[in-house]
Length: 408
Image (cartoon, rainbow, N blue to C red; front, side, top):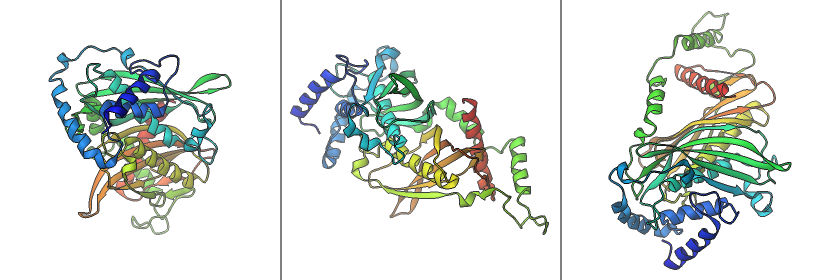
């Protein structure tokens, strides 16, 4: 837990450089380091892993400040949560190394981490109670609804600006929209638009039913889920056609399967990874930082798409990242990139599944499913499923790809 002296110093510094609910003070917008410092200050998080248990126990005392109903809360406007944050890659060269990749562009995984932190702070801005030193709410990411790229190139030596605000509020969930632009050739130009859905939990980050998040959207997704409902007639025809194209005409047998020209079996387009979740990757509530999970999933998906295409993939869209369960420090995180679920022309649809393995019980629990759409310069081979399960993954990938292309 921060000492009173450190808290007093942090409050003094932040009051000069940062104001929740406004873009900036004295013409200076905060940077990402200040965003994360502000989050720790709002929550009262410990910077020392050994003290995290005491910090959580002290946060439990904040429960008395929770409102029993929304009627007890003051009305807020979108302007109350407006925030502008700068990433000074151009004016602070020492910062570039963290964001630079070997293609001499910006690591998008780092941008995902920054968006996650910013979305949390935006929601805390909306729920701010100026009478309290610390917030009794634990706000965490539940869903990344959509990230649309408006520009392929992100320069490693030009300043970046993030802006965002709350756009919708439910009973215990909040939607935040963010925009990223970059200063180049004398002006800021749009790079991406992002929509995150966050949830508010109790002070110790324990009580919340994730099934309530964005209920309407979850019902729609569940109703159409291939895990619960059979494919449509058109989709069944697609799968049957794929199956017929793999039959060996010489044997005329359902068991004899051959790979069509310019195609790859889905089974041969996989890539896996493992992460041990160390304390360094914790968030302000001492769980694994959601941005870290997104970065690792993106980098695995990108690597898989790169190996599949034999060329550098460019991100087009990210959608429907559902945070189903929190990941505890010390967990073994298994990442499985079922690339490629679907390909069309020079586009590659990637699905990354993450799960936690409990090493002593050998239990597996899904934590996230990620969907990425990439584009490469040349057309890529078609992906062909062999089993019924792979066929459902193929259709799921096609659905996500078709939805992404609608907005292009």
